[in-house]
Length: 220
Image 1: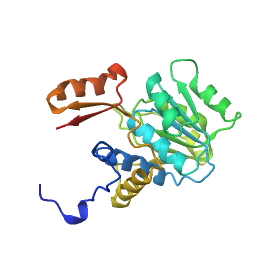
Image 2 (image 1 turned 135 degrees about the horizontal axis):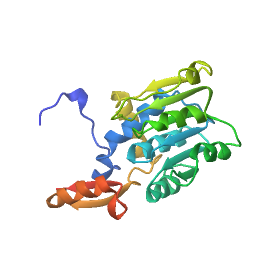
Image 3 (image 1 turned 90 degrees about the vertical axis):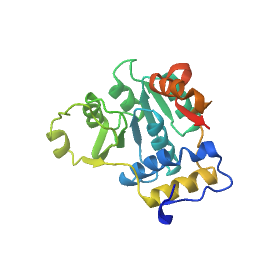
């Protein structure tokens, strides 16, 4: 493959090939936290802890955010996020009103930043419920249907909606540096490494989350 030199990054010796496969999604997390202008000590909610949500939480932790609350339907995803990626509180989404539980974690107070990493329309209202005045709601997810919300929930509290798509060159380099330095646990969400011959199984596992799958890596 021929590529422009400016678009190619040398993999540092301390980064394994498995970690190297994750630089691209880690850069997505770096970009989202950058777009949020996250400051040390700010409180964070991550709605959805698939790989991107996990990486957002981990980068937010490196930036000094606290508390970091993650919400998901998959217990094994929350477990990894809490044990290895800086999430301070994990909440299962199917165990009662999540907004009330999130606010309880923060002493009844709202959160500075809410990251939406899963495209479920009702979560927009949930984000607006828990974000504080002057807070930011960062959209990383793509939605399959139009989203409706009450504009006064934004206007009345000076809430900012922020879009975050992919990354730029600086984000890629930051992701490489975070992994190389050990600041983030790059392979925390890698649950399976399969040979290329099992590609079909790998995609099925990643889609269904079967056998505790999160990130499934194919190895030629």
